[in-house]
Image (cartoon, rainbow, N blue to C red; front, side, top):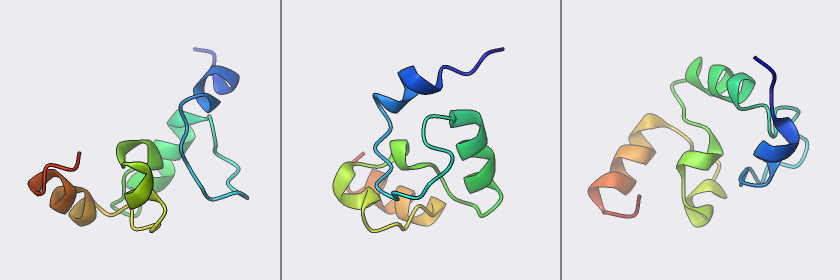
Length: 67
């Protein structure tokens, strides 16, 4: 399967500028899953900018109906 990195960049809201995984979703998911995190695209922009991508943060956002 070929990565559609250029196409994926259109919807990537990762605000971490030196990120080498932008647009490479499979690499991004694997990287964050090792740390019990979700990638930036799972979070609203305001929450993503906190860089807290933990499962727990996501669960709080879901409970607050922000996701």
